[in-house]
Length: 489
Ligand SMILES: [Zn+2]
Image 1 (cartoon, rainbow, N blue to C red):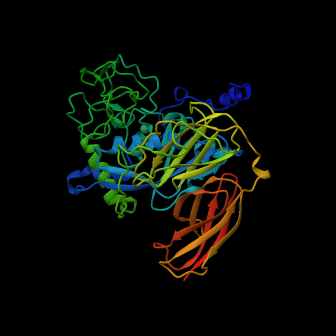
Image 2 (image 1 turned 120 degrees about the vertical axis):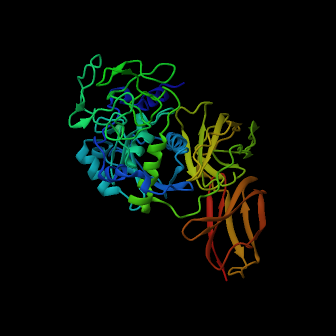
Image 3 (image 1 turned 90 degrees about the vertical axis):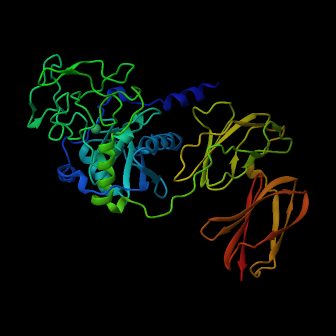
């Protein structure tokens, strides 16, 4: 591997690790809505269907446009967030496009700049989440009614930070509520009856309605720092309640500070009821009324159309249009291509809404590897496909020296709807083309592959699904792209 490649890799090492950060910076205490709710939870009807919540994801980098967490990592984390909320019958979906922000003051921020970031970029009527480098020294924090900020180093596989902060956003306090900030408490001693002005929860839960987080199915927990657990999922440290009863904290609860790899993480039933009620009664505008999109089938497999896996290309090639069979219900594809067989960082990378993409500047006699990850705003759990590989040929000609497609004409033009048009053009060589019909705003309406012959070509394009209006017909070749307008009457 070349030296420049190694120094490139060094740039991708994270600057901060989660171990250096506080677990959570959410303000302690119960929000007013939860205080009212917990007076009489039975008065709130429960949801009888899955609640879908639109989430706007903002990925923040520095002023130079660097440091954004990758989309791939974000999708993994979003998938995990929904796993954590599955039993709660609450599911999030990605609202609109991901919002990329370049601002050093927001990238590593103090609370004031974090609030300013949310005030500036929040989208109304959705749950706003910001992924930054350093959210005020924490793995994350939530500001009720405003949004959630997360550190990119705390959304790894296996982390429940996002679910923890989303729990706060939906009104949940910590399981050790009241103990926040008591840094030097000696846990070998029995706990006092009150910590601050909050009643301490007994190990037998006898005062659970008035103590701690006031949920009776989250047992006593006094541990206000990141703690490890034993194989049964309970704290290794022994706590003692005000009556002298010893107990261990439950590490499975997402709203505790147990380490993520303790055990299967969960919300309790009462916590789930509170989050659902919070959405239905305090913030119904966060509940989507739209029909959720069908999921991408879990067993969907990417099928490489061009090049075929293992294909050796003999044509002149410095650019290539990769093509694969569309995956049902996929809205987007992340495409990675590298001249080496691993993807810990990526040389060619694209996100496309179509089942093909063109990359330029390929080298001669080189093996290339590519992989594809389909996703939609509702389906983010598909992983990258098996790698495909191909080998480029002998001759490489610089892109700018070569224009292989010429004399594009379309007739009839204008054309009547439901008819077909003839597309004529000449090509200097045999080559693989993509022929697309685009709206004037660039939305792809139709796309086909076409093997052009050297010399004159003519191709019939059916317009069955195209309504009247002005369109662009686009030919994408190995080295160039040409476009003509087409009027459909
Ligand atoms: Zn927290």
